[in-house]
Amino acid sequence: MKRFIPFVRQDPFVPVIRMIGAIAASGRIGAVLNDATLGPVIDRAFKRGKPRAVALLLNSPGGSPAQSSLIAARIRRLAEEKEVPVHAFVEDVAASGGYWLAVAADDIWIDASSIVGSIGVVSAGFGLHDLLGRYGIERRLHTAGKSKSLLDPFSPEKPEDVARLRGYLDQLHETFIAHVRARRGARLTGAEELFTGDFWIGQRAVDLGLADGIGHLAPKLKELYGDKVRIVPYGVRRPFFQRLGASLLGGALAEAEDRALWSRYGL
Image (tube, rainbow, N blue to C red; front, side, top):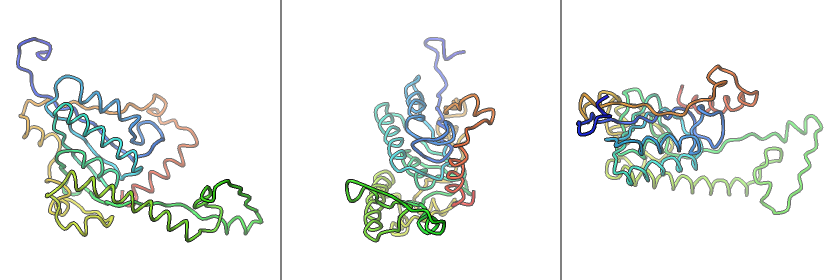
């Protein structure tokens, strides 16, 4: 109650934004992370009251580079505008796009078993032209523009298409590396091995400068802001039917894609 009484010194509070899931432009609300759904949550965390800091509670295997960049940029923009420090706390994993989000914080704290890193870019798909031929199915594709059918999964793979894709991936990789270097700076060690797409666990990640130490959310925030700090959770509310476990048939494919991302890290 005392926070509503004027002239009474209030206990410090830290909003905690829970970021759990793969990163994608679309998907089931509450099951994927993107700027459209997280944006209002991040805005509220920074703008309600006068927080001493904002904490990110992360558990993400990554996903969309663009969405990772948009979310991280929003966090940095508000942190600088409000002059509020940001702390990231990793649960199981903050890898690839998940690490992109973690690096938006001023410091990163992990568990001794947390997985972090995977600073790289991946593109995956299927080639189905042999399967179509086996069943006598003819692919008919007409385009205006020679690159309009780039990497079509129903046509044989072309070396020039692969070379172009590699250029795109390299460009995204360089953007990722620049973001990590800008945010982590001199804390990084062994830079050559850091950007291969590999990932590390616990203390080894700390030794490489990918994280600042082993630490958990509540004890660390109390250490930083005192035992009376109020930890206020913020998150995306899932729609009513999703909370009951109902989902559309199309959700099965999204779930399979999510599982493929998580399984790379044994989760």
